[in-house]
Amino acid sequence: MPQQNDLSRSLIPFEQAASLVAVIELSKSSWLIAGTVPGIERQPLKKIVPDETELLRVLHRWRDEAVRKDRTITCIAVAFEAGRDGFWLARWLTGHGIEAHVIHSSSVAVSREHRRAKTDRLDTGMLMRVFLGWLRGERGHCGMVAIPTIEEEDAKRPCRERENLVGERTRIINRLKSTLVRLGIRGFKPQLRKAPQLLESLRTPEDSPIPPNTLDEMRRDLTRLALIREQIKAIEQARVARLEKAPKTGPDAMIRMLASIRGVGIETAENAGAGSARAQSA
Image: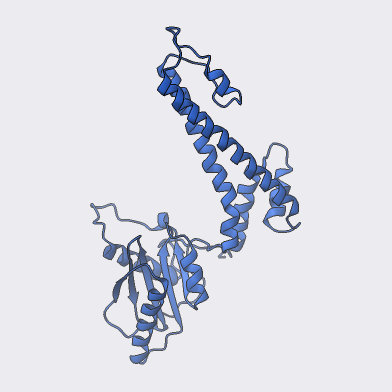
């Protein structure tokens, strides 16, 4: 029995004769739109500048062509791969009466029998084939991504910002340690709050101080490290304050419950709670 959150195929009956189907290859400089229009033998292809209004105009023009061929269009379904543009376009199209879907990029199978040319025209043809298969309810073509609301996307930002800051903190610490190792100095811990004061007293095995340019560079790195430490602390304090004020139901309540388990921190609880919320909303 299919599950409610099964995004590997469509569970809605697909009437291809009354559906205009389009896929979009999104890039920074242009959007390439390919369509399958009932009553039209050719498969239209249109490249436009990245503009949602122009996209909607193209879809409506193709719909009008089908109507002139005595076809009744009851659904316009559009799909594109998840990527740089995120989910705003899917939400915008949905708000204008278009059935929008976002394809999980890694779920699209690519033939490995021979070296495959990479062109937008071939990509749209491949996306059209997998999207039509998905609409027909067939498994194995592709998987869709649950489209979050803008509030749900915004709720993820603190966790992702903290993750980036922790990564940057690790890179700075490793860079400082590597710089000292090149001078023959070991055992220094840049993560200590008193590290800037201890830096001045470090000596190489030749009993000489750290060279001036290297010392200035390390001071700047330690300043950045202190700023990152304060930003991480601010994010964590804001998260705790938000959870304390959050309602007793929904994802935030689940995060609080998970965080109360011994050995499970808020970071792990938030990631687990967000994943569970996405599964329920899919």
